[in-house]
Length: 137
Image (cartoon, rainbow, N blue to C red; front, side, top):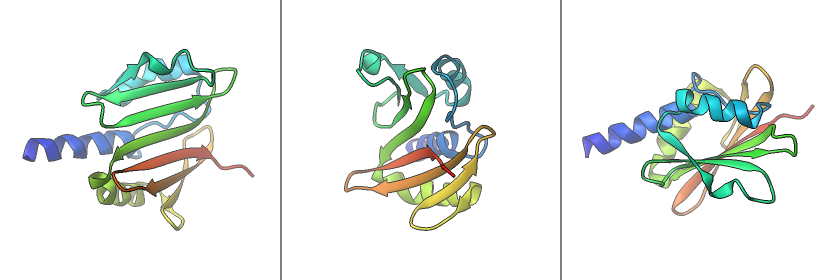
């Protein structure tokens, strides 16, 4: 039980902490190159490679947690979506609030060095999703 909690705590920290990279504005080849270093617990899932809409999908070993990068026609990341089991929601809110500027209604603001980012969290019955998008002026 303790190992499972520790694993999920490390997973969430690595995926959402201030030290972790979000990839808005990065090219697909750069994301593929940096992901093993930045989020080592996630592995490229090739199932989205032949999709009509370009994206990269990474899952953890258990395939319960997913990180997706949605790309434009030039292979540049336009937004990210991170899906986790609902029992990690409170910890995720606490982590996001600690590391980013909280706005309201489960929304945070962050500058990744290339883009001003909006981080939004949406809950559903069994899981929650964290969206990272560019803030447009």
